[in-house]
Length: 144
Image (tube, rainbow, N blue to C red; front, side, top):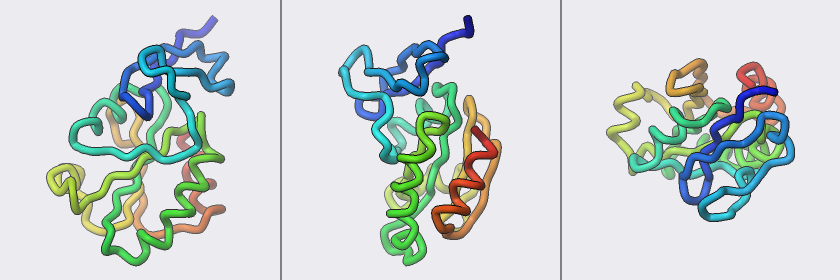
């Protein structure tokens, strides 16, 4: 039997242990009883960013975006649709660089949208620019 996976709850940010063989079945948070996978991107802030990228045993794909960015607005529904197709192999999340400028600077975000994949706190992939659904899913799956 494989080790349980640590999965951060998208609602309360609690770390949950989920048996690896039950990953595809989802699961509920032990603290707030919310589903661990809801098929929607998680909103990241300075308060929960580190927990999500460091404490999840599954890769976390972060969309660094801003509300004034035209390509970001075009890609938002595509990114949301990708979440429903890529979970639970990947957790998708969004970080508003306008509200979290320190994090954007810390991760050297120079253009938006920028997509970065993190696994256990380390960045393992990055690309910049908007993508259609097919290209986004193809690119993301190489990290799951």
